[in-house]
Length: 309
Length: 309
Image 1 (cartoon, chains in turn blue, green):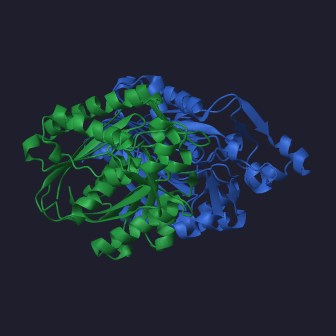
Image 2: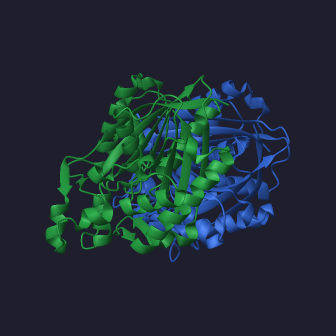
């Protein structure tokens, strides 16, 4: 079974920066109310761009950063929760615009945690020798589905795209995943075409701080690994309060929980690859480091991946 | 690496049966015009049901036919090109309505050929020991996206759901797949939310009789297998003329090309599992038979799977 490594990352944030001040005025909030409750200072909204545009831009940056020839990409998997493009999907649009002659494309709908599923699917194709290089994208145009009268979601969410290039490596590297769905509670976070996004904030909060911790514990048990040996947990950037509470329940220092939602908000499927990209840019990761990616959200779906850098 | 086998199938066709006579009147056609050109006598449209309803019904039948306990299902993957349910997806709705306590869910958007991708993803989880039993569903509510003034698509397409249960087997069984995307030509067949389905019939016809044949040849070469040893080709049921031409170009008897679109029309992602179900019902397949499933359509995406029964 082949091992994998991350060889490049790229992101794209839309041009329109939306500061908390826009919401403070609308909802008559104190200037620090949003930041204190969410950890977010700004987010971005797509304006004259499309979801495919921003996915393509992030992909191009990831290809550039990984220094691969685009023709080496064997598989493109996109995760999203906010597309209207059912056929062809966004992954196909990426193949088309990058003019990649030969590859396989698919879009995955698996809630805000879809990037984890997409990453794991690409890893499976590489592990089984069906692909050598994969492009995984998390992309959202969630602003289109936002109910701007709903303070629960309007202040939290933003658009963006993150792309990761994964490649087969001859080196022996640990990889493990634990992905599970809890659809029985799926109605607490929904996004359907021609409807506004709905979230039951309280229930999502509880889910975010309990099921995620259990999921990470199951992953560690499955992998026979200890949290002490994990350099960073890279969580879905939902809300700083959820992440603080998650760290507390995992009994780890909050420094170990990588967060960047301050500058981008909660970008659903794009949040983990956007965070990963920043970690690579800041040189926070070195060869041999073990990290855990943890996604959770609508579906309900959640999943974690333990990966060796 | 674990081997897989198909252990059960199920389908569901909506209640509203639509005969050619409905179109003959509208388009002022001779009574046999549609059948002669497409091989289709009737198709079904969802009326008071939803896409999730019909997916759940097909899944329940597949579970019943396979005689498994639903709790043994580790992974549910749905392929569709006609959903508005982005989060939670249809697979999550199936987990919820079947009340399966522990499994993994995801929906795949990969064009009319998406069932092939969904099947292959489930097979990868089983091959790598991450799942033992998987439920793969192809489901469409394409009637919602039909332009009833467009004779190219209106007479061809229908709604339906097909479900397949795949399980790990200790027996040594052949499995091979060849999946590829040709997104550069993706604009000849599109289905987006809030738009009507569009198909360039002539270009799709050419694609359907050339790229599919090449794809099957690549699969056979990869698998080191001969067409003579294949009992049936189970194609996406697009149009009888495409299937006849495909058989001719493959130099095989048309009997070897399993067709059932006469009674159901072209049901996009649901067409292969609906055909497979019928083949099992008719006892056409016995242990050790090798068959090829071939999907093709929007994306453009195409893929074939060689599987041993």
